[in-house]
Length: 558
Image 1 (tube, rainbow, N blue to C red):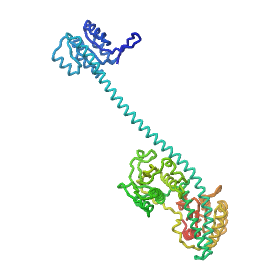
Image 2 (image 1 turned 135 degrees about the horizontal axis):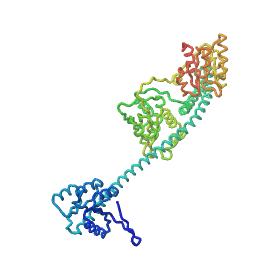
Image 3 (image 1 turned 90 degrees about the horizontal axis):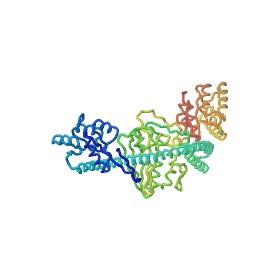
Image 4 (image 1 turned 180 degrees about the vertical axis):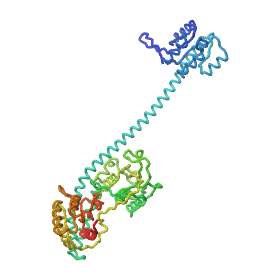
């Protein structure tokens, strides 16, 4: 708005401008004088074209114009002023009033139509009313704009808060992932070394059993010791689940519904808790390690059961997620399935929420703190995420997000020897020459003793170089080994995979069994892909080794 500032006694007075257009200069002076007396700033023109040029450069909100002028008449000037500023209030002031011109002025949105012969107060009244009307609309528009901007700022503020919250979640996830990765490397090393020790312990126990009668007291004690060793191996297996290199063996799963129901039913068996299921129709397919996912569902459901000692409802909801990024900031793929497990239990205190996935964190007297840490690691290695929401006294909800797949894939089988399948397997004796490579002397000694007891001729070496030298010498002297058993990891030396590659150059028909304390290593799970005929995970019993060895010896060459 163009304004005139007058400084009088250090007081600044704002004079709003009024455009006055009249070809009669005398009339201009009269109107200009009246406006000045009202503390208004008259801007006068006798030429309408000059007035239009001025209005192109300066915003004018109130104008008084003559109706009849040369070149551009008052009504045409009215139209052009409205085009420049639709909000302008134009007062027609004419000495030749007529009904037709008055109607046309009203149709073109003139603010007022007056005669020059009228009352001066009337003209001034219309001028003040025009300013009041303009200011009222201006204030309304300003208020509307303020409301709109306020709403936008509130939305932006909420979006910013959400973004900060999601970013904090992502940072926490990253810190948690790095922490688990570091602990995983440590846990993997510990599990590997512990499995080597258990192999020696379990091997000696199973070998000692062969020298006892089934029903005597020593045999019973050995069976108990053997079972305790196997339980210890289950603990190392949990360590390996989130250890570096323990990748899941995924397969295409069309019916995850049965897997979830079976896992939940098993976990709730014998308790007072009940389960309610809600499944989306046409659930998307996923690629998962069914054994590992069942372990996750089982772990979470057991937590839910234990949080409701008096019983309650465990609600399991499985639904499709069409746009992962809208569901959670950590979801980078398009489609997911979400498995939600909600209970009515005692909840988790806020102080513990950030710790529940940490290894060895537990609030239970008999807990070891690996269940949820293992679950977190499993889902992470499936390219998914697991979240938890809880409030003390109001229950807990775990959500598992797994990437969906639409492509059919071939089933990958877990080929590591299953403990339950050979639990009651009898020792299988045999004949043949066996070469053992392992860096642990205790393992070489006990495995050699096992195989000798089974009827095999055994030679053991500590690393890949010795294995290649021994195998080459026997091969060239027509005393080839029927099977070689290779430890997958040799610290500072040639491991099982590289050793087999070099042995294959000597004898393309070499039969090798891979053995490792890293039972979750992909080579152990898909050993045929790497040229091995069989595999046995440490720790193992004599009967397990005898079964695998017998199968490999009787196999035709790959």
